[in-house]
Length: 431
Image 1 (cartoon, rainbow, N blue to C red):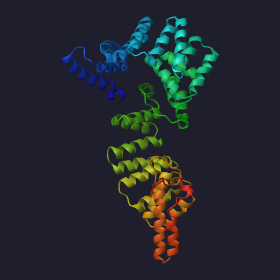
Image 2: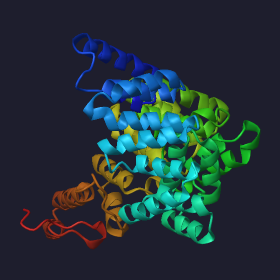
Image 3: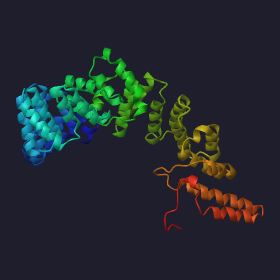
């Protein structure tokens, strides 16, 4: 299952085959049918439908995979246009798991396609009462009658969210109906990156340039990375797009398929050398997995040179220096040379404050602590307030060194209360 979710279907087949060899040596009808179900699904993803059908039939022998096995057979039947057989398989699946919404949606669609519109409408009315937020059901409601009111209801539910478009289109593709998926995406008109890529993947290469360009352009408006197998398949088919290579690399890196991710990022920067995030991905791998500081630094420097206003890249470049044991003076020089960018982020400002304190420049830190409005972030609790306390202590010591105890006392008493601009308070009962 791990390799299947990584979209490594040949490896999933290999592991499932090993599991079945072990299971069948003891019992030709094992209690657990998950290995057969996984292998069938992996075969299906690779277009090996005959082998998939054989394993789906094996999966229905076991109780824990009966519902999934019959659903797989229903998908194959729908793909081949055998709607009556598909309906029967859906019913068998629903006997084992009556609330599987994907199976319910496929069953309703097959009723429509087989000419049983009245039955489909009655079933759908009940399903919409039971599952009012299922976007595929609302698409079916429009698809059956094509009324403007049904279209408005469907679009109103989806509200332009890409997850709704991707879910319905992905189901239609899995059911072997790419034409319906393309029609559905065109009707919903979701202007977000992954639905646009999915829509482009359903067109001939010569006709999808506009959609691909639009997908790249709208990504900053709503950042979402691929996490479903349908999205991965769509991106893999658009080999001419450098940004699709980047998104695929992010998917594979997240799934710990590092070799695939690195090959994709390398291809990405070959196709678009000016794309900073491609170099950033290579840098992250170079440090985290190869432990190669020089290579990671070169990649990150290249990325920051391409995107000098990206504070995240400056933060990560400083973090790389910090992790590699660079001196405070070296780190501070980099941040002060890019001070305007460094001050864009509270976490980087916290590092800057600490470096000023380490290099004996408490007055510079005091100016920032007195004038900047900070915003708490998850994982950063106490980072700014600790720098505030340290700053008060260091400046108090300076006054003691110059025999000014009154000023030192004022600073120490002020350290007991956090200023409002730090946006953090003491917990009740804290010492």
